[in-house]
Length: 467
Figure 1 (tube, rainbow, N blue to C red):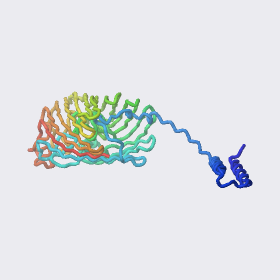
Figure 2 (cartoon, one colour; figure 1 turned 180 degrees about the vertical axis):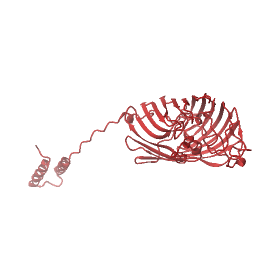
Figure 3 (cartoon, rainbow, N blue to C red; figure 1 turned 90 degrees about the vertical axis):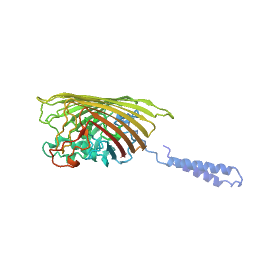
Figure 4 (spheres, rainbow, N blue to C red; figure 1 turned 180 degrees about the horizontal axis):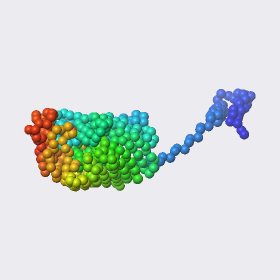
């Protein structure tokens, strides 16, 4: 086998031969030719003496859920109840952090003396600059297969939702003062089957009622009745199956209807199906069933939530309207009770239409209606209120809202919203409030009756930062 060093011998022979010859004149063109030959031979020697490059291992083929991530085919940032932001700026190694700050000023036109806006889950304080919701969270995003997250929350929104969970009164070690500050907490595993399969255990967001618990993800700042009447969170087991790139199926096994604990020994559960066959279309069907009434083992609540969203216009170039879409939600359920308590139907509709004038300005108009035959889902006074709720079923309520959005940065949202709500009987905070004489908390005073009105008008200014 010829060794790589043989060109050195050749160079040496050429050099010796040249030295033995009579030196040519300085202007002899053969000198340049000889120098070029030596340089070429030297370069070849250096190239041959380099160690061979190690073989490049073949790139590991990506799995199906990595090549075609669920809902990654189209841009769904226009959807109601969906975060429209780009990827987070706060990814550090295997962790992605999240910061959410939501502040507001609300004016309720009855000017309640106790500054309490009732009923509502968002912006519950009148004529005060207040803090609706703050969240600090972290997700594990850089470890293959592992699912983990924890989000802690503070603010008025915490009291209006998780702070009103009555199941914490059943026994000990289920304190509202502990669990209500957890917005999400889950541990699980991602399996590379189909377009992905997630198995999680913990506290997670619910999509019954469609709208997200986070106002920033919704087209309107306040929630429709059909959303406030249905769960914003579950405590239990969730399985997410991404059967195709456009179809997600969730299966739930949970403690109850927006509760940390449960009233009965049987588990509640249901499903959530979201199909997005086109960029301009999203279809949702969800179903829930569980026992939700304390001391009534015969109680049973089946409930279904259905939604269709269509982006019916998309402008191109310099147009007056950038895009337009609507979201229609229709719910129906039944509260079965043991005798002598009455059973009855509940359900509602919500229709929202959003016009995006530019990439950062939009207007939403929403109308909604909700009916509750037995009052099963009508909000009662806060848990600490000493006065009985005076309302009597059936309840019929509805409202309309107009929301103006301005988002000069993907991370900041400013809103101005006006809403009007109406009910078939007194349901909303009146001038004298619902707290007590003079609007001050204390033991029940027999002479005081909570002041409720058939209608409610609110004006809200909101600023939200989310990273």
